[in-house]
Image (cartoon, helix red, strand yellow):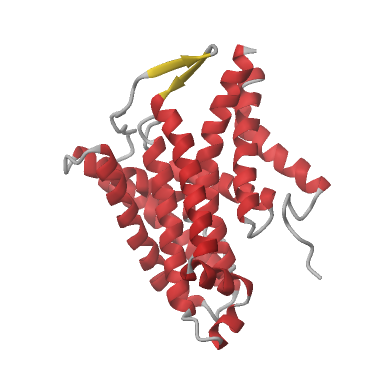
Length: 287
């Protein structure tokens, strides 16, 4: 039982990261209706930016995390303005190509600036605690609690603020929002900034635990799409639940069968769930 609960704890930690990243991707897809294939690479850049502010500038961990959020928010605005906005009235294939070009650019940029070798942010909280036989790292607990706080804050922002209401209005009916005087371009830029900033939070929380590498965004980006599809396209509750489901599947499958096949378990679960419910867990059938 101790092994089981240990793997559940690990799964919740991974699921927290996946949920944060998938939340940002879900927001962008809901506004622009275009999958941002570079989202995982924004996560990667967020980790490196935090590393830069800690290792080069000498900031403390929490200040570096905050600066990473600001920088990635700005990068998100630039990406929306110069990559996606000019393609609004173009065929969807153009946006797909632009997204792939963006991820290749971000990965190449990281290779040029930081190199291909793995880097690690010093763990600000290396202490370990044991509860009922489960070994928990303080930094891993921060990942879990950070995800919960971010999810709650994002929910309150979307449901209790005027800005959140305008974002939901654009997601539901872009043309109708424009007719009601909503600046759709501004909302799209803001949504991209929020999306990139959430990726920066996830990367900054996880970077002291795992190595940074220019390729780390590729597999996470794929998993984020798995989660979005698993939860139902455009569904925020689905993205959260899908992230934790994926994390638990990986942890339990890796702990009891083989860690080498944890990604296989994740994509296998996607196939199985979609075979049973093609619209995802919270997806609705189109009329």
